[in-house]
Amino acid sequence: MKLAAEVLNQSRNTSGPLIVVLGASGFLGPAVIDRLAGLPVRVRAVARGVSPVPPRAVAEIEGYRTDLARPGAVARAVEGADAVVHLAAHVGGDRSWRAAGEDSERVNIGLMRDLVTVFEGRDAPAPAVVFASTAQAGGAADHARAAYARQKIAAEELLREATARGTVRGVALRLSTVYGRAPLTGSSGRGVLAAMARRALDGAPLTMWHDGTVERDFLHVRDAARAFVTALDHLPRLQGGDWSVGSGSRVRLGDVFRSLADTVAERTGRPPVPVLSVEPPDFAEAGDFRTPDCDPAAFGAVTGWSPSVPLHEGLDELVAALVAAEASTSREP
Image (cartoon, rainbow, N blue to C red; front, top):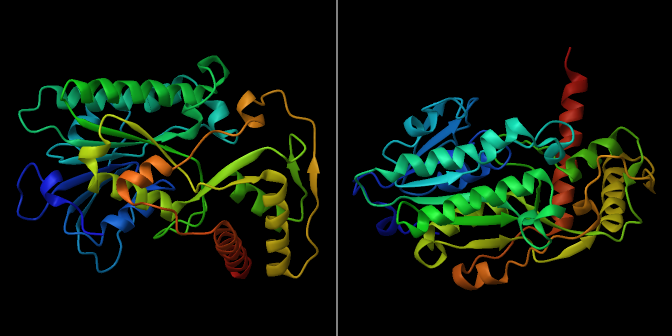
């Protein structure tokens, strides 16, 4: 895909538009960097840690290390930006979004507030901002949503209001459950499929808090990254809206867990681990027992984007990477 540089390059820099990626060293960030690397753009990869740089990149890629939660950090990180891909998020610890609280609010809402405030008084054309939101932000009434989803909704509203004022040209992508092996880093993230694959490799049963009929839409990390670059390419028709981005195919968790157990068995030569239904823990949320709506048809109709990685292929790749990593670790002295 050729990026619509004439749309993004408000600074008219001869080296191309400056695209700042916030959260560049997370699970999704390296995949976005990998997509941007083949385009005639400048990329500032902003993260607390070291951001990976693809070999033989067409783009000019600058690593920028900072803690975005510190006062003034966002303003410095996005200085001169023509576009911002906002992937930074706080998803808690082992319980992921269930641990969302004051710390996560500072990141999940506060960074968006900082971002639009920076651009309020900028004497330059409004930059593009493509924000990573969640499919959990749609559907059910707000009181039924987890704290993480409520925080994402609040950030979406800040972005929408700033777009209406002409401060930014904002787009929110509501992603379904992202999984897979990320380019550049090889990370498999902390999502449910990676967690269950590790359990199966350890020989532990895969457990569900229901009878297995609850459905999820699983989106491969490479397809998710491509959606962000595609959004930049079609900014004028997307700005001001929130757009669902998923695979468009919902699967029962019981079925996908059994497929995952079988895939691990094929890779290891051991029998598949059992898939069991167990009583839900006290911290279970209503969202654990419903399927978020994440139909990508509208986004695809505007942009031509569609997912390209089938779930069975993504699962096999994920398990193969985890098996290889386990083998490598066992060989270390």
